[in-house]
Image (cartoon, rainbow, N blue to C red; front, side, top):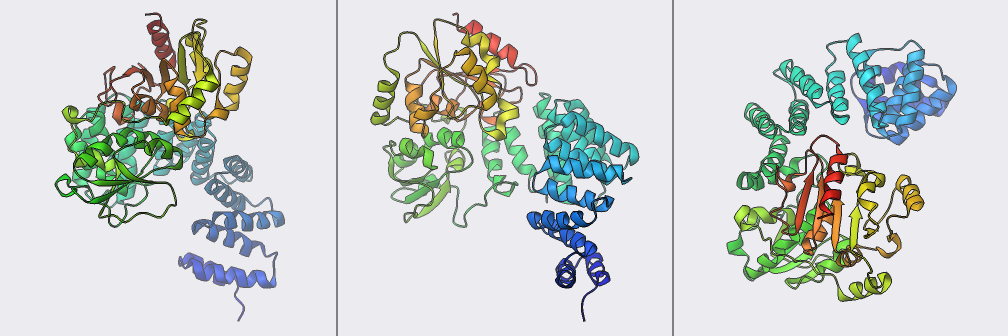
Length: 514
């Protein structure tokens, strides 16, 4: 017997999505233009994470009946899932004009606006959702996230505390974990790291099943310089979202058991992380380990210069045989690292001589002091750490200094300014990997950079480096100090207020006159 849309709806109501989808497909084999089957199948695909298929089916339904409010709402959700936030906003707004203004739709519209970087509009939308339904926890949670995104941390804190106060006792671990993490972040951003730690520890005591709390706690502990507790807690990172799962045979090394052992050390997280902790390879080899090192392709030439490594592997290469396997980010714990035991001797990385010669020939002899600058990094860190190059103009206007861009790429918005002012020489064509970046760094007298991999590389090469830090810095830069125990040649210039780069730039400009 041929399935009907009523059959599909019944299966969907019972959360039997596979049977509901099968019924919809049977209907569409007979009637490819069946609106309800297309609509429901699009919703099912979206619910099952088949987002592209969800968009496709919903668009087919939209071609049949474009003025259906419920369809537009569901199409907006599917577009949001594939991060086409502009199209999601259009669908949600159309649904609203069709008199479909439920709080859930307003909340989703706010999420789409936030995804486009239009946080101020998203805040208004979340507040409208709360006005329609003051009990909407999703709208209150997303409002707090949007407020935090534009620096309204006190408001975000207040909202997260309200959510915690009304959280039911049987709330899921993930729900409570999300709220606590956002509250902890809002406190950190206000310079209240100890309070943030207290909140995280209280949540962990109340709900030991929240896997991510220990990870967030580790970041605060390390930021505060509580290394002994921090490194141990840092191993919980494997439980955090967006982390690769640890290998089954991964372990934190017992340094008493590495002599004559073949130890495979694998890369993890970003390039700066790997560069920072390559300092542990020589001490590991000194303990008698026969080290094989796996790194990202753009770090291979630098890693191959490490004398303590027997073999260096790049991505996709067959792994050599080994007796023990560990992550490079677990080496500080293995070495029981504290302030007095950080392997801070620099340089611990070296640029291949061929790259140095190539860069020296390319640059030619220096006629003025040379300073390398970095003002923007990866897209993930752009809002937090980056700035437009024009913000550095008080520094770059020095006619007695050559300024050189150390970035592998330059944003189009910065390119126009650079072409117009000609205050900084760019070298994108010369930078293929971090060995080329290192060669360029070696040709400089000083490096001025935001918190990015170049900061770590300059420090690892023992080059004088001035690092511009956000108000709430990454844990490795600690709090309240102008130096770094990791890099003896580094000087830290911290924001005194959230996203306040002007004061940082002015202080650096004054320091250059010394």
